[in-house]
Length: 155
Image (tube, rainbow, N blue to C red; front, side, top):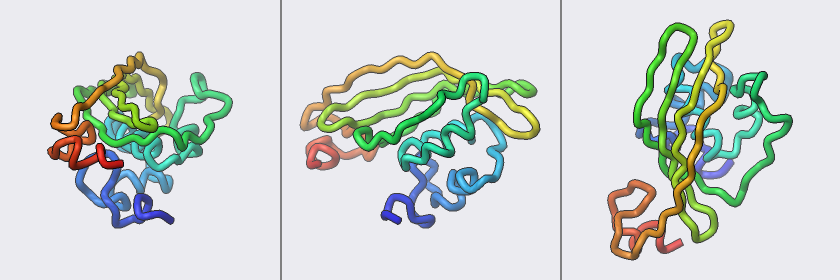
């Protein structure tokens, strides 16, 4: 178990809570109580490379046949821009910042969710990817509040 997956480490979803009390409980099988909670837990699953969880929480009607592990992408920041829940349907508009090698990008998506038998599932979304080119003195895309050169620019 790496530092990033220790139960007492900070949850990748950005809640500032420990992984075990935040998204970790959903990764262990507890149903997410809302589309937003499911979205946060799926982001954390992407960050922690939990492909089985991602497939399990993907609605069977849109679930891919396989979901390969992705060691090349480092998911670093999640921003929930908007969310709503109406009965057994939900929507979450989010922005996720990632790094691939020395390249940075932002995935923005308006995701749809559906609840069946007491469980929320990711249905689909409309993604768009924007490449970032942070300068040395720009704010770091990870959201730390530090300059890029003093944060992720060192990696």
